[in-house]
Image (tube, rainbow, N blue to C red):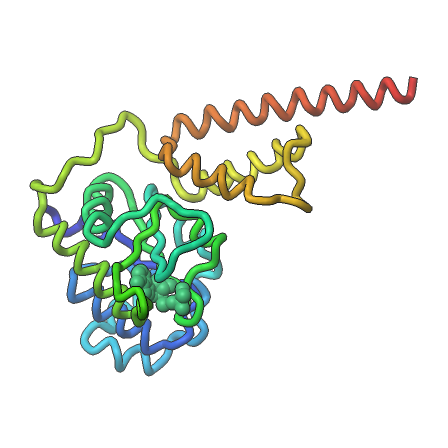
Length: 256
Ligand code: SAH
């Protein structure tokens, strides 16, 4: 397999507190042949501590891309996997680390992919995890399941490396005629969907319950492609137009 494929794999660290962990993460990445680091609002970066801990991998720190939001870090990605040290209230499609490595390597052959890691003290928020198609959990000791951030990056990068070395013997991901929808288009779709559901009085932003979460999970299971997403956006616009016409007609009735 071509090693350029590994350059399509982003490691995204969200709101990292300790720069030493950023250094440890790039060392782990470089050992495994990964090079694309995205830092979402790190608390303290650049920092000498990150350079010390990175050992010979400071080149990855220099070209790390620092952004303000997770959405910016995910732009262009056709697959996003979120890591989680514990179970969340609403279950999500899960991969184990081995399956994660295989899927990430297979998909990186055609589009950028991201593996997202959370804060040292409280991991990823539910909103952040809901932007991910799959969650991956390292099956650690259930009584002590939270790994150090850089250690978690090491485990998942190692699985990516093993899948990469397995190369063409990897189980095939089904061929598709259209590219998968990109993370930023999916986000735009959900904003559009939420607005349309408000417009037809199905959804109330002040009392949202779990509606949007469940819809995100539903669409995530389908893995929308670019074409399907654009059809769905057209459908929403159609629904909004009808809702708007009905509203105008009703208001006209009232003033008659
Ligand atoms: N106390 C936090 C743990 C954060 S550990 C919590 O309960 O969520 C920091 C990060 O390391 C996590 O956000 C995740 O990205 C990664 N991590 C740690 N342990 C992990 C595990 N067992 N499986 C997957 N990721 C893990």
